[in-house]
Image (cartoon, rainbow, N blue to C red; front, side):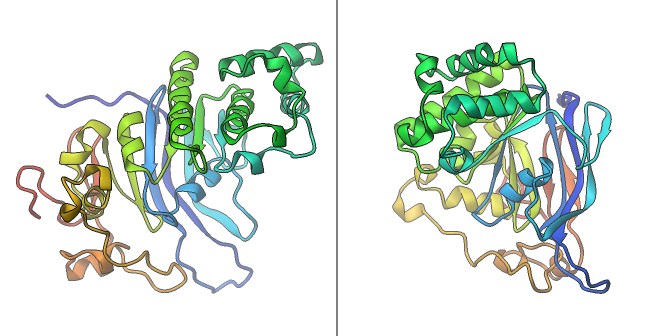
Length: 327
């Protein structure tokens, strides 16, 4: 029986990001090339791919935080049936890769909460109680101790909890976590991911987890979206990814993940490198790395192939789930 996907809380349509230029006739390859992705209320979606594939840039575009020199040239964000342009406020917050860089090193933690509450125009009399409650939600007790601390006095894991609490201070419906375990030891990584999952349940918010760790994506998400060189190539339920992924890049990621390989002899690296986005690019940017590429893959944009309400693959001849061969 075909599943019916829940209505999207956020519908990303044809998101495109390019280099900004003052030259009218200059042409640049899109750094983000027509991303289509839906996220339902309360859902955890993992966005995976190699470093440099455009995952973080996609998140910055969603938050209207593109760095100088880049601009969104196409695309629309629809929040619960409401048109929201990139310049408009929207109910999302972001946890950045480096927690120490995200915190102001010369301001106490409590003052940084004050900055968020002031931006939200929350009555000053509520600031302290809200900060205490948020730190308690991320298991930082006693909270008064941490409110008086400076970032350099806290471990990397505690700084990440502070950053998460600061993001929650916006009361987002969507929390974007961009490589939230970067630089943390294995135990702290699991603690942070467990915390994010628990907060998602208690606060009934959606979570976009950006990671290059396929094992974490499988363990902590409902669906996985795969990016390669600025293009989305596949979206499918996490429980079906290992044996049901149909794009050759998705299959290559599985084969290149040590903890998923049967043994070291079965481990295979992804061949080739990400293409140079400054030059001419094939229609499918995985073309030069794909052993089964055809001539039309270089010239014609791959169609989206759907199977069910929550499985999408952008490929001319996706891998057959039953046989593992190309159709």
